[in-house]
Every structure is written in C-alpha cells, then in structure tokens.
Image (cartoon, rainbow, N blue to C red; front, side):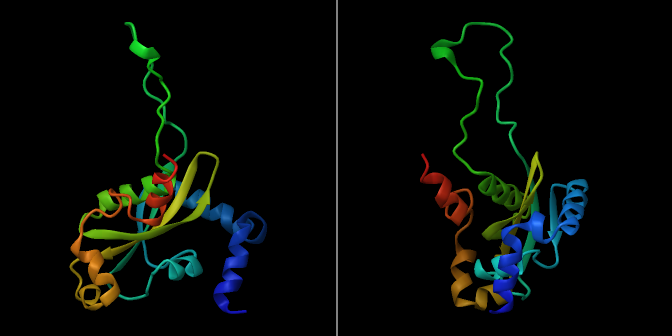
Length: 169
C-alpha cells in the first residue's frame, strides 16, 4: 500500500485512530476565526485526490460552518397566509455553504474543490482548495486554465458539493 492509502485508512475513523490529537485540533480550530488560510492540507490524500498540487497559485482555506440555525425569526404579529413556515428549507449542504463563504473571502480566487476535516456537535470544518485566477503558473497549466476564465463556479453549483446538493431538489 502507498502512503495515501494509509492516510485514508486513518481518516476513516478519526476519533478512534487519531484520538486526542483530533480533539485538540478541533478545540484549537474552534477558537480561530471562521475562515483561516493554511499552509498545508490536513488530509493530504483527499486534497491530492481532488486536484491539489503543492505549487504556488493554490490556496488552502479551512472554513468553519455552524450546524443548524436554519430557522426564520419568530413572528411578532399578524396573519400569515398559507401558514408560512418558520423553518427554512435550504437546498444546500454545509460543504457548499463553506465553499461559498471561502470564495466571498478570497474574491480573486476560484474554488477547485473541498473536503471534510472534522466536526463537533455544533460546528463542521471543511478545507477548501482554491486557485488564484491571475497566477502565471495556473494560467500555464492546461487543466486549470479553464478555471481562471469563468468566475463563480461555487455560486453556480459547479463544484462537486454543488452538484450533489442540486440533485436533491
């Protein structure tokens, strides 16, 4: 087995295999801001599988997304036609929301893909792989050149998580 396969096996059950390290990381990450740029991927196997390359022009962002909280404010007064629901029905998964928030923070970049890194009871963490649209190495790469041309892949639902959530509608 190669190195990436061992890493993949460890990440299948992080609470069991990584133990205290995993818990310490989650506590540390929850104290940090919601969008943090990082140097290296936490899950190297997954990042490489999704298209990450260790060269300039690639940006990694760890994004924090709170779970739940998808309810509209309580009605103060008045009649609600058609029994308007307080519960918001959102057709996006948390991963797509994380990608969109990261893309809003780094406007000169385009989202390539993202992957799950951890979650507590109330928070989910995703690492988003982003590509600098104006970087010379990205523009020279045949496969990534097309990403630089069109803007807003995430908002149009063209990333893998966007395709997954749009099929549920």
